[in-house]
Length: 400
Ligand SMILES: Cc1ncc(COP(=O)(O)O)c(C=O)c1O
Image (tube, rainbow, N blue to C red; front, top):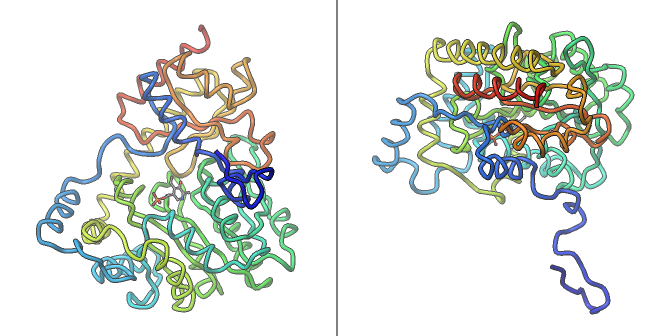
């Protein structure tokens, strides 16, 4: 539908120009396809089991006790802000003030949106690692910014950041770098050396950095190092995380920002007019979740590590070229060795009919659609028996 602006001859689309290129997200399309075809959904990244029972009970208790049922404080409930501070200290040795350096948001998604809306002027350039999580492009557009992708390139079974390319992408108009490590969809975890160089560049060129670290606890054989721990970064980095991935409650939408008081105040200015506040009772439950003993985090990592191996090995045996992830709960594959189409969109649209599995074409995470065309992402945050069944079905592809 269109409406006319002034003249009946000049029909005007309802969706504005900034958002016109962003249709329905592929996740909605593919999840609907999974339901319609009864397929195993390895597309969207949500676990098929809830997180710890005691944390679910903590949310019920908060609801029943009337904690958070009315507007919580704009920065988040003190219990959660304190728990975030203790988590950053215990895990990474980073000290933050719970009153001025923490902001609770409606998931990482709102933290990303509020940060970009707060920190960008129209025309500012934002460097983002491509392929990128799809909300980045939309939020940069909403803020009137210009995205400048720097591609992670596949080589020897993993994806790599070319630091020279990153350096060359910085111009006088660059306002910030939008990082994501561990990285969705490639599973790359930036190394200490890479992060040190990014930090050095940010300081040298006086750039801000927004770093999306929602998969901070989902790393296998490698270490996640927060960018804020590098020299000069504490005061120029907005660190974003969320409870969705770490505690397997993606529907609760409790996220947070840690940054300097000045950056937090700026992000809060945007956040207060997006949601003002969110998810009161869940904030109390997430505060308890963050204080879970190390055994919880170690157990989660061990479980997902085994699932990573199960799915990666199964996909390789089914004929895919597999980029075994060091982090996140996604595996990126190259479909070309299967011998059929090299178009991931076509492949993913056909896959449910061919073998009853849903995946996501990586091209949706690229500006340069051709570069992402032959790659397809599978999620392994599902029960072991579901992954085993998916692998069995995928192995049928070779003979179908
Ligand atoms: C890289 C990345 N950032 C942010 C999010 C969204 O997090 P939340 O559900 O907390 O909004 C996701 C979810 O898939 C993600 O993959």
